[in-house]
Image (cartoon, rainbow, N blue to C red; front, side, top):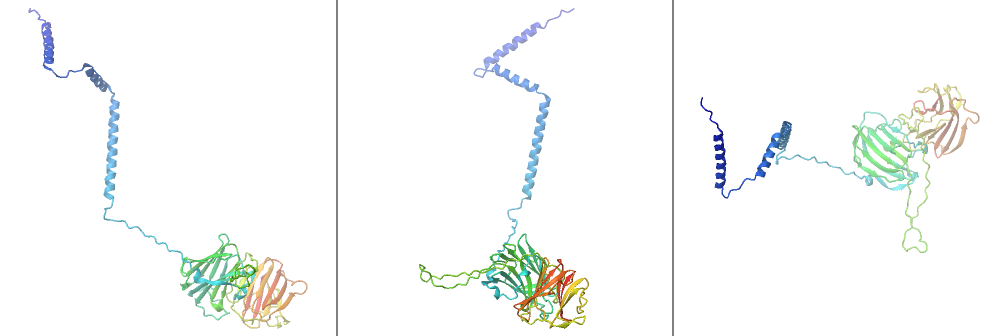
Length: 457
């Protein structure tokens, strides 16, 4: 056997060689920086800690980086899209121009200069005709009309709005109401009266749509011409300062539709008087007279406007505006009624003694008189509780003392107790005392020449 040769000698020699080589290298590195063992140890420690980090931490970092990359990509996408959709510098988006029309003040165009006394007003309605509810005048038709002008007049106890109408106004005065349907709506909450004129195809007044007239009286603030809500309509709004009565009526003789609003205007004539002691020479002292104002009537009733000299049954205020200006209206007295009696008037429930006319008497109380001619007067009527007052103007007789019918007892009616009649300044006034409030109407039958005042039983 060969003897086993040990490698210890070679290992010792190898270690000595490496050690000698290391020392030799260090000698050859003259001037070179020497490694700091403490720093190497720290680097090794950090490297070992990095190697020891769990895999979960590495996964979290990857997720964070992926989210960040996606976010940046999305931001870049939307930024590029916004840039591409942005209009070029040469294109401009037109900005619409809104033109605001200034409100036209037409006060000076329609307002008369001074306040007038009530006595100067033609066709002034009775106090009982002024109400605070809806009213209407005119006749429904397909005719075309023109609104010629608008005017505002001021009187001591009311302010008048005058609308002059022309067009299909060829019907003889006093036989047919020729005006277009015109309504007045009263809004007590807003204190407004809204006027709507129908079948108006032309407006030639100086009061253009959108215009405002500042009336500035005690009870009236403004008159505004609104934009029409329908074809062939004109709408005006009267703004009030308080809740007051008004009356809508027509004046055939002048082709006017007028609205009178209860008001309090002061007449202020300038009167030169002798200055008192101590007054400066040449000073003009203006005397302001005290004007009594009629109390406002605010009975909530409805105006019913006639078409052929007759009204319809209602409990509201009624009016007949014939345009008659002369005191030529009268009755035949006496006349012979259906029973063959010579009487000045006939009355009764179902009125079997009344002259036959086109009207029915069944279920109705009728008071009848024979007309002297076919003239239709101006009439106003008002029912307040159980008192029915009818005022007939243009009466041929100037004055007459009050008379009661019947002179004693009652009329034997289920609805009318008695009647008082009087004449003052050519106005014949009937005051019916009713047993209950009921609908009534006034009928001028110009064919049979009778006047029927009727109350439903």
